[in-house]
Length: 268
Image (cartoon, rainbow, N blue to C red; front, side):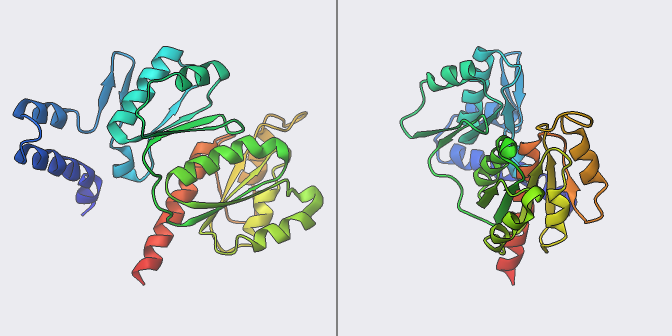
């Protein structure tokens, strides 16, 4: 059973290829070439794209722009777009953004840049239909970039997202009206720097899973997100904690929980 679930994505891809060959849409040589590359697509000697990751584990491969050569980033992004139909690019610099904007994209392509999250999403056609609800809370305005990265990823994975920012514990009364808007959330991402208290508070108030996302917005002793990370790990409330500034991971994990919950509710 486990093996069937793990490799179901391969069977689906092979089925599509064989049906195309059977209809005469591709040659035998082309079918063989595609079968060999059904799960990995090479981009020169720079990258090997895991183009079946979303089918295999439910989370798409994202391209981290940080540290990449601009030409390499463009080539990798276009290859992923061609293979999968969409691409998420994170930590995009202004120079890299200019190169991505200059790409010769198909007329049907949608180009979405989120300047606060520093993300670019390029998609052929419509986004997935909504499955599950993710609530995102940020303690302070300095925490918004990480929260927005989580939002972009959760939405691209097909979830509906409700977000509220600047609701930290220094003014705890701001939190409760926001939580009332999120009563139907299947999972929460709660973002905080400084001492990182907000995820612990939220986890003690809601019945949905909470993912604590520490950010590097704090300073002084324990700055750079260290105090926030330790605080969340030491929480007496039950929550999951991701690495400092790991907006992609938090958003993807919350979306995976939300999707599973939505699926189970549909089966009832």
